[in-house]
Amino acid sequence: MKVTPAGLFIDDVKPYLAATPDGLVGEDGLVEIKCPYFFEKMSPADGIASGRIKYCMMKDGHLILKKNHDYIYQTQGQLHITRRKFCIFALWSSEGMLTQTIEKDDSFWNKLYGK
Image 1 (tube, one colour):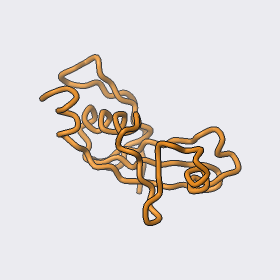
Image 2 (image 1 turned 45 degrees about the horizontal axis):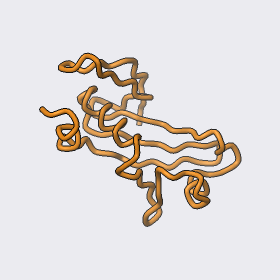
Image 3 (image 1 turned 180 degrees about the vertical axis):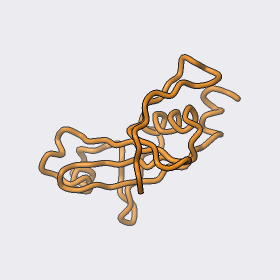
């Protein structure tokens, strides 16, 4: 997978909304990476298990970003503004990385901002 630099994207309809994803994947994807400062000597899975990461959980060995957290709003906003189809949300530390692919959800966006 090749990740390229993203830069600033401004919404076509609402120019007061902008997004700066951490990277772009092909024509359809983007990347958002979180590196919590206290992860220095802890794997992401251990950070979640210890309760220090409250915005994610593990289910059947997979990372799940909680639906009510600000990062869902961030990723859905980035997907809408960049007109991309999916976001690879990554939780990274020097001890490992977990990812979740989040699909664009137009109904989520429309509830917030309308069509």
